[in-house]
Amino acid sequence: MLSDTGQKLYHWLDERFNLTPLIDYMQHKQVPVHKHSVWYYMGGVALFLFIVQVCSGILLLFYYQPGVDSSHESVRFIMTKVNFGWLVRSVHSWSANLMVFFVFVHMFSTFFTRAYQKPRELTWMTGFILLVLAMTFGFSGYLLPWDELAFFATKVGTDIAGAVPLIGEAMKIVLRGGDDVTGATLSRFYAIHVAMIPALFTVILGLHLLFVQRQGMHEPEAFKKLKPEQKKMIPFFPNFVLRDVLLWLIILNILLFLAVLFPWELGPKADPFVSAPEGIRPEWYFMFMFQFLKMLPAHIGFMEGEVAGILFFTLGGLVWLLTPLWAFKKRGKVDIMLLCGLLVIAFILVMTVIGYVY
Image (cartoon, rainbow, N blue to C red; front, side, top):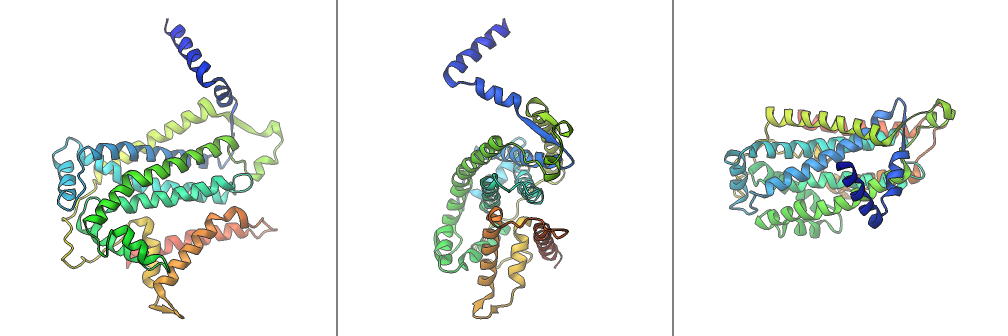
């Protein structure tokens, strides 16, 4: 009876939405299996953490009240009075950090396996945009608890944005809603965090997933050279999907472990009239930029050091975005792209470590 009902429902939907070609496509899609196959799952993990972000964020919105007089108190209420509110907030905060981490891992694994090459140029570019949006997610959400650390970190971050040549001052005023970090800034960051960035992220993510599905999984050069009978493939559905879901469950356990044993704390309420406390630092994924800008001299030639640093990161981001257009092919034993990728990772790690040690 249930089977007949299911078939009738499927035929009803198929007549209206033409599902059969999609089902056939899913059944025949194959995923290559090789020594680099593990990197195929990193994008799925980042997607799962984004879903966790959305679900936990919606739960927090039931109680969060934006405003200078209400933000800090509403977060404290969530953490102390709402059943499992502290857990939901910790899950939301930890999943944000893990999402950025896995997007970084996914991007660099794509770079080192050269999965940005033709015909996947737009897949790479949309992935880079998703990384920028994920970092913006973190920056915009950092202020919402309106605690002391978030207030002064946002002040430093918007000051850096204000140093951008030509448009910096206007950008800072737009972000802050005025000359200083106030309730207007909190309202704008709230709108950016819960409306603007999620909408943009969802659209770009949809395009990114569409590109991946249409082009299939990237095959490394060594795998392409194998004879057809030597290539090992598995069906995308259900084999690859089930493995993906299993990894999601493992990540969920790690996320809950972190949220329970290392719950996200809430600092003292922000007071714009007190001096900034010592040790104001951005989130770890901004630390390499923050530390590099801090190490620059006051002036580099005719330009202010901070401005030169911002131009450096802007140019570097543009070069990284356009990687598919300038990438060098391997010549002999010299792999220029490999060296470039290792230098970028080394720079990020060294600046981050220095930022936390000193």
